[in-house]
Amino acid sequence: MRILVVNVNTTKSITESIGEQAASVAAPGTEIVPLTPSFGAESVEGNYESYLAAIAVMEAVKAYPEPFDAIIQAGYGEHGREGLQELFDVPVVDITEAAATTAQFVGRTYSVVTSLDRTVPLIEDRLRAAGLSDRCASVRASGMAVLDLERDPQAAVDAIAEEAVRAVREDRAEAICLGCGGMAGLSERVVARTGVPVVDGVTAAVTIAESLVRLGLKTSKVRTYAPPRPKEMTNWPPS
Image 1 (cartoon, helix red, strand yellow):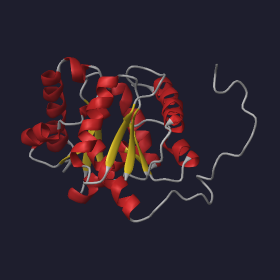
Image 2: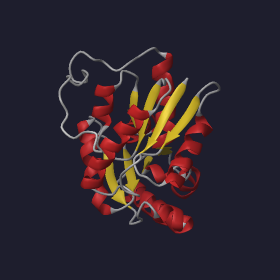
Image 3: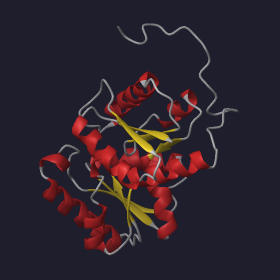
């Protein structure tokens, strides 16, 4: 089984971290292939960058030359999952939805702790669109930019854990979702501070993708995710 794990930004060190985290839970026989888009922003923290990333991710997958069995979109609250589902019939798993779905198996309510406050509405919208918002106690911002997670890991852990503790105490969350692909690998340290289950979207997405492939399930092409109709594309891809 081969699973493509696509970073939404162009920072290769984040792609490598996401790939390592994905591989850490992959079953024997599952090959994890991390991909970095060829264009886009170094970090995705708003709508413009998110829409740009959606195109970049789709183009990165289209350009991959070998067969694959599933796709993971490794961006939290980002646009583009539906486009991937139109383009490909293999399972497509978004880490936002994977984390929230998994959290609901281990707690009645969950909270998401993300990076900057400006990303909170994107995550709320994605959860609402996926039908996962009813049991979401809160979406909290740690105040740490995506690239801060690499520049000052300890400060990032402290800020994320502090908001997670507040989510448990003030919002009555019973589980925490790490709301950024760049937070991969922080689960155990946040568990130690909060005492509740902490879900990393990357690892959750890997196990869900593997299950879908083993069940022989593919993306439905009857209606919503039918392939794009053939038509003339003006100046695309750009030269």
